[in-house]
Image 1 (cartoon, rainbow, N blue to C red):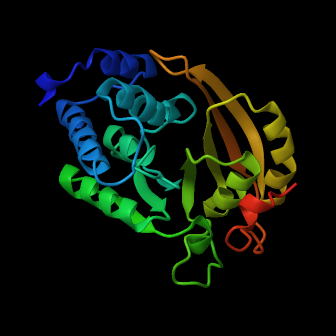
Image 2: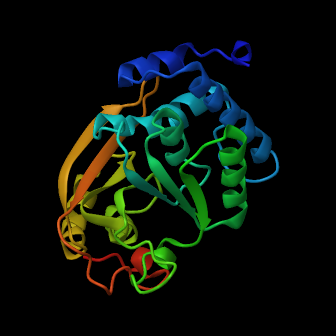
Length: 246
């Protein structure tokens, strides 16, 4: 399968991140790419479909988490608003020790994610359908995933205060929410600090870098969960994005 693709930049990017893949893992990335393009032909998964661009802007970008976290650990991780599976599926392929939950609000995308999981034979990963608010509800609910994960990640497009309200309720005290951002957001960070504190977190650090072979700026925010999130958060559907905490 690999002879069809020029893997030069992907392999160099992996080396720059300090990631070594077995051939079976590389094959899984290629199969994932092919499924992405196939399903994208009849449903909207991504505007990026050219192989090298997918490798840089989706695969390497997802894997850049290794810059701020030791991914070679038996940790539970939830990917909120995963879309076509980024960053969760690349992280699972490269770091099989991770136990991953993919959450997305669109049933068709969850169907795609389950197809990828099945075709790639991935274990300890599940895709669930719902809004971020649905599964962060009171621990008394049988659906609740509240404060059950070591790490929450999200590449979703939303301001940091809104994302924190969606994501921090999922994180155990002592765990982390890591937000992938694609712009310089000093002002957004400042506006989000109060919200993050209200939700039981604090900004621990941020890591700024350029994606390999691109002019794309990336900013990883690491927010530590220092205390339990008050029960009233997240607020009901829609409010976190319409009226971010401030």
